[in-house]
Each structure stands twice: as C-alpha cells, then as structure tokens.
Image (tube, rainbow, N blue to C red):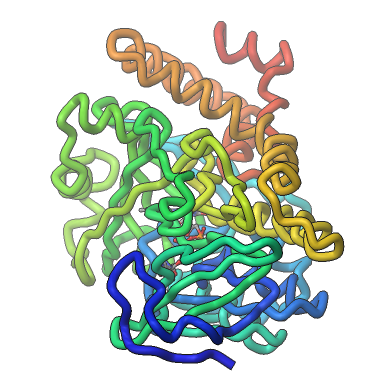
Length: 432
Ligand SMILES: Cc1cc2nc3c(=O)[nH]c(=O)nc-3n(C[C@H](O)[C@H](O)[C@H](O)COP(=O)(O)OP(=O)(O)OC[C@H]3O[C@@H](n4cnc5c(N)ncnc54)[C@H](O)[C@@H]3O)c2cc1C
C-alpha cells in the first residue's frame, strides 16, 4: 500500500517518510520502453509499478512509424498486437525524392518476407495500448504521478519520491528503471544525464490532412540545407500524414537552423511536394522534441538503476528511429534485472553488465550510423560530401532495384547495415 503524505520541500523526504509502497521494480515512464519492461517483469511474477506523469491519452511527439524490427518485437511479445494493426496503416516501401522531384521507389516485401516493412500508428494509441496490456499483466500503473528524486539509497533498496503535484508518495524499490524519455529525471537525479549535442538530434512534426497522392510508402526528402538530416512524409491514412524534419542538434545551433521555419518552407516550396500540399490543412500545432541518439549517454546503469529507451540514448543516429531501441533496451534490462533480483545484488558494478549487453547489441548498427553522421556533420566537408553521397545513392537506386531495396532496408531495419560494407555495394556507391 502506498502511503500518501503532504508535499515535502524539494530535497527533503518530509516527516511521513516511514511507510512506503515496496515494488520489486519501480518503472518511471509509461512509454514503449517502460510498458514493455513492465509487461515482461510482471509476467515473471515481480511486483512492478509504473509511474506516468501524464494522464491517459498523452500524445508523445513522434513520426508515428513503427519499423520492421519494432513490428516483429511487438508481434513476438504475445500481447494481441495484430488487433492494433487495423488502426494504423501498413507501409510497403520507401520513396526518396530529391529537390528536382526525381524519385526512387523501393518496395520491400521481398526483404521482409510476408510482413509489412513498417506500420504507422499514432502514438497516443500505441502508448495507451501498451499501458493497458501492462495493467492486464498485473503492473500497477499510476497516472499523473511524477518521479522527483532518489531520497536515500539503502543496502537492498532505493527510496524514491514521486508527486502528483498535490501529494507526495514514497516508493522503496529494489530496482528503478528510468524509462522517462529524452529529459530523463531519473538520469539527472543519478548524475548520469549528460547530453552531447554532437550526438543529439532535434526534430519537429505536424499533422496535415488533405495531402494528394499519398500511398502506403514513407517519403524521404534529403535537403541540402539540412545535413545530416532529412524531411519526411509518413502517411497515417491515404489522406493524412505526419510531416516533419530532423537534424543533428550541434549542426542546428551552429548553422542557426530554425526547424519550424524549415518545415513550413519544406511544405510550401519543395518542388516534389508543394503542389500536393496545396489543399492540405495543418491539424493541431507543429511540435518539436529532442532525440538522444546512440552515444549521447555515457553510462546507462548506476546503483539500483537502469536507463531504458530515450533516457538511455537508444535512438538510431541516422534514421531517428527510437521505438525499436526503447523496446530492445527494455528486453535487455529485464534480463539483467532478473539476475539482480534473484541474487539480491543491485550495486553499480553488478549492473554495469547492462551497459555491456547494450553495447554488444547496439554498437555495430547504431555505432556505425553515428560514425557516418559524425562525418557528415563536418562544417566544411559535411554538406558537399553528404549531397554527393546522396546523389550517388539516388542514381543507383533509380537504376538498380536490388540496391534501392537494400538502402530502403537500412532505414526500416529490414537489412543490417553491415551488408553495405560488402565490396560489391561499396564500389557501386562510389563509382556507380
Ligand atoms: C519528431 C520526432 C519524430 C520521431 N519519429 C519516430 C518514428 O517515426 N519512429 C520511431 O521509432 N521513433 C521516432 N521518434 C523517437 C521516439 O519517439 C522515441 O525514441 C520513443 O518515444 C522512445 O520511447 P521511450 O519509452 O524511451 O520514451 P517516451 O516515449 O518519451 O516515454 C517516456 C514517458 O515517461 C514519462 N515521464 C517523463 N518524465 C517522467 C517523470 N519524471 N515521472 C513519470 N513519468 C515521466 C513521459 O510522460 C512519457 O510517457 C521520433 C521522435 C521525435 C521527436
């Protein structure tokens, strides 16, 4: 049972801090990372509480695209995922459109087998579905409850304070999962928050209704003024799309890029899009949010604490896809938590195995993507190199469907990036 008490001043546990809720694992954040971790832990019989600062129906700023890996993960989780697919749009391929309107199209069914290569689903629906499943599996989900601070570390547990704004509640947990997104309070409270702007991305998106000729394909637009970065049109139906753009945070501040203005310019002036947007209307506001790309967080574990999803910086530095990193890091975290809970060991040294396992899983794919974007962010060489590389890639995509499918597959996660390192493809990219 939780014991409620009046709000205490910041940094103080207050006078009523004796009796508390005592879950095995306290999960901070009810997004994809937190919910999936909750589902897995509850299935193993651990008492699990999820704190979510928002109310049900919260809409995380996102591109709303689930790549092939995310779809497969959710399917394998046995949560009745198929029932949700009808509420989104299955995605069959990718179009890359340049500023002259030239396009290369890659349909990816062959690469992914019979499954769609992606699907779009609005984030309020996705998060609500996962929260509901977590509740059904036995998690205690507390809405409107914001994690505030670690009050005290004990030998076998950590004492945390959370608040509804009116009232504080204390939790004594054996482990805390920080799944609280890009501005992670848990990471800050543990001294693990340090964002390197060279590996952060910034992105904005808006919903537009009435776009002509939308298909079941993602549209990607590499823009010369936004390198390394790109703009997108991601259809949610054959009438409405999530339209946005993203770029590395350091390049954004270095070049004084204003993302909202760039988005409006993209929508109204891009030769391959503006005609189709003539009758479209913006639904709601254009909103932006940071994406902590892989490498932006140095350590993802601490005493009694593991950082998951955006809180741990598990976003693909090239595509900006973060939902898969959230799901997969939750899976890895639950494996480590199982060992820790069985042995009753929660120290920094023991939990460092989470860092190791995450590195083993993500380094090859996300690490190599971070290297490439780092190169393309070079102030003098980056832009010309990026545009030359993109032209080569586009040219090859137009002429060679196999090549186009591979490139599109990198984006959706259908193809491992290391396939690109085969001499055949390197030579083709460099010399056509
Ligand atoms: C514009 C944009 C477009 C994107 N497009 C895509 C895309 O198309 N596909 C894709 O895969 N990824 C995309 N991403 C990235 C993706 O949105 C994130 O990587 C993903 O949401 C991470 O999931 P998460 O569970 O780690 O964190 P989140 O989804 O951010 O969830 C964190 C949760 O924690 C809660 N919370 C925060 N602080 C506290 C606190 N102190 N106490 C309690 N609760 C708290 C929040 O309310 C939130 O519900 C995009 C991001 C942006 C900004």
